[in-house]
Image 1 (cartoon, rainbow, N blue to C red):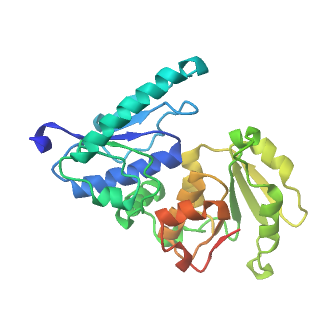
Image 2: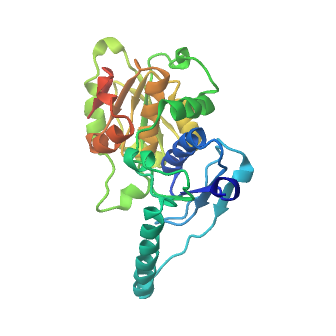
Length: 287
């Protein structure tokens, strides 16, 4: 009865990086629960209002967008916490009987039962399977071979520089430009990197950060999906504090494990949950 009448409801919040974690989970669910229909619910709620990116791995009729973003003032905090506590208790009961899961970890996923109905989590502490990486990479690369990497741009370097709201945060901070410049300047001379393409959500701010006569900087402003697509054409990549940077490295290494990639050491724990064997790639480093 569960299989016939109740689809699996997979909920998703956040930007493109978080949405890709949800898509990866969807693909693994689709493989493991072949007799079940899976519906994805995109929520706009969160710290800022979010909308789903235009990339789909399932039929559009299985995707529902819920525009539920609400700005909550402090006067409603007591009611909000009371509501969360009651919902939390209900989730514990549903989880005990196998109807609910957070699916945030490998253990969560492996322990899911066949009668699962509701999945609500961030899904970012779970290993991304080769199966889902294959399908996601195919979506971004158009199923091009590994030789597609660096096919057009010779030995150019790409930097994905997340700035945006981080410019105004006190707790969360952007990677300071001198750390990136130190890394670029430490690149062996025989690699002959001259052109550096900086992709940023704040290109004007990024442009004010980078000046070096030894490199030709070009500042790019494209949508997040194109940032990922274009990242596959560079031989060298440096990411910053962003889930999109993490996904770029996952997809680049899956396409070509000999590509050169660097991420800030602050992402180490998150990245190694998604890809536990990342350190076996000799051309990958933390900075």
